[in-house]
Image (cartoon, rainbow, N blue to C red; front, side, top):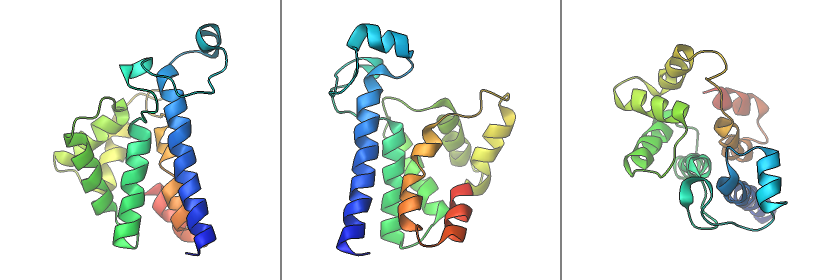
Length: 159
């Protein structure tokens, strides 16, 4: 990866974290609630949803970084390594975790393979309660790593 590509990768992950930290205090609020309480959120806010200090990121950034570290340290996509990192992160007791994510990690920790844990949890949930947006935030590390290989990007994104 060239220094320009490295700068872009770093910027992508920093942008993801900053956007997450900006949104965390107002997570689950309607646009109207946010506007009446804060106007337009342009600064890092403390407290709010989850009562965390200003600049605190959520599980979405934490898990994206687990993927990024795995891709960097393993030099390739390794679903088992990523699942192990997710489980280790989960065991550290995050202040917040999405319901689907918590259930999928618990499923994995109970012995279901990394390939099947998320799918099994998703299939057990009623349609409409089985799809959050956190998984989209976890796409950035794959997009960075496999930008020049669309077939691999598609495959690992699905996995």
